[in-house]
Length: 72
Ligand SMILES: [Zn+2]
Image 1 (tube, protein in one colour):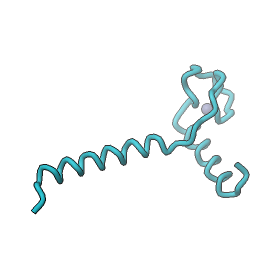
Image 2: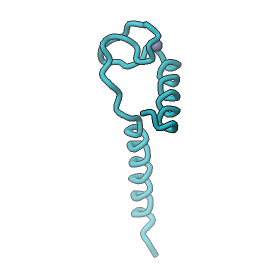
Image 3: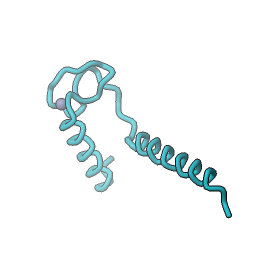
């Protein structure tokens, strides 16, 4: 019978891996030049990519659609 402690540890590792891979699932974004990548015209900090969550969601939706269409 497997040690329950080992099982729990393995599960924790698996969960962590899942979380990490989800974080890295987002495709590489082009560097922003101080403008929201969704081209809404908002100025943002260079370390950011979008001005707001809505723009990020929009952008990701468009990227996903382009990937489906094979235009990306
Ligand atoms: Zn924006």
